[in-house]
Length: 199
Ligand SMILES: [Fe+2]
View 1 (cartoon, rainbow, N blue to C red):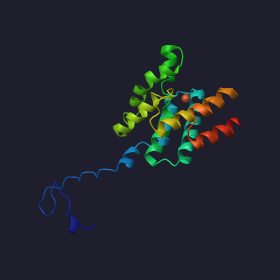
View 2 (view 1 turned 135 degrees about the vertical axis):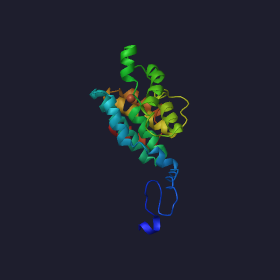
View 3 (view 1 turned 45 degrees about the vertical axis):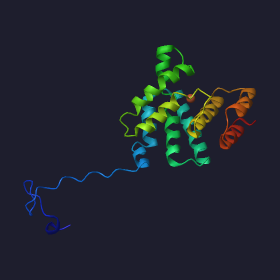
View 4 (view 1 turned 30 degrees about the horizontal axis):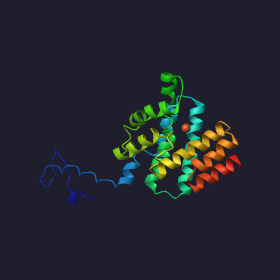
């Protein structure tokens, strides 16, 4: 760009005698780009740091994220929903450290009571839109509730967490067969559970 065309700045004035133009307003980003202001790898890195060296917690969240991501991709979710599923999977057990300290256990109802507030604080400086943070907080606050499942994001989180828990805790064949009837609803989740547990 030449100085002739655009003027040169000198003590707040251009050669044309005008005060320097104010910086243009940033263009409003489309919703998806705003959602992506904090990336999934950044959430993963932050959650691993939050887990403070608890290898069980870290392994579990990575496992749940992997299953959730896989099911979401196989079910062909739109990009926004896929992002919410993955963010919720990574953060779903965020209340476990607090619950161990406060209640001496990680019962589902305690996690649900504490989780939504914690994940809101965790994502507060992320630049993620409020409606998206609210949905993630709702999912984290309901991930032990198997009734009134109101979306595919919720369903996939339940399925991914069940598969991870079934392998980590060696659930009985009866338990898994029951889950196949009562919890699993996506075809991808059912296929995964079947091939992992070999029922
Ligand atoms: Fe979990």
